[in-house]
Length: 259
Image (cartoon, rainbow, N blue to C red; front, side):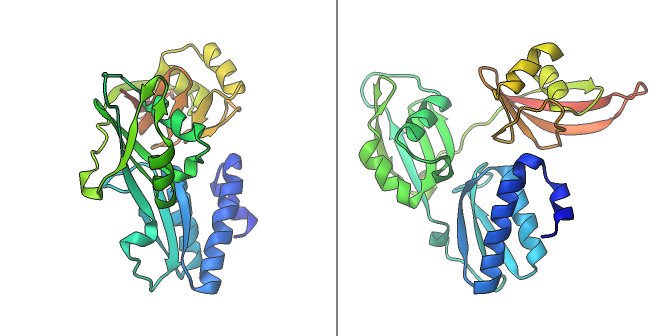
């Protein structure tokens, strides 16, 4: 890919773009498939766009259930018809036997990564009142079944389940609409999280804000429709819609804050 095509992507995305370029080129040259780890929605979109530039590389993305957020991507020759097992997905249920304990998404994710599991091996987590269902890479499923037995103070049991038994997460948004002078991440995040513009800059500079699952430290980065912004201790929000401009030149933005 020539340098001018890098202009379509953010500077912090360059290493990932380069990796996807190399992967798709290898698939094209060797005419054999290659599988990524779990990617976030922005990365899936980038991977698909890069594959399109090759002309003879097809993209298959699967996160283990319809509407999955994190997905594995299989690059393959355009004549390839992959079998389901080629995406190498596994499904687990984490149960909390005994006394009832309330665990949050961050508790589960922290326990998984605390075992040394890389984030790319973990798909979506669906937190339920009685535990958590999750999608993982197949090679991680047995590891977790054997080694995941404690989350915080709670004893847990990880057991395999069938794809059909996976309980989808119940994602709910609290919608909010406002106007901003620009689509800078500090402006949108400040309004979305209900903070003053001055109060959002320090968390950004210190790496506490993530845009599409990547820490950024530059407040002037622009946001786009579909972007996900998370701020440590404040939750996360999604840019649902970027509308037109008001008579005063401000841009209308609709966000959804994850409940």
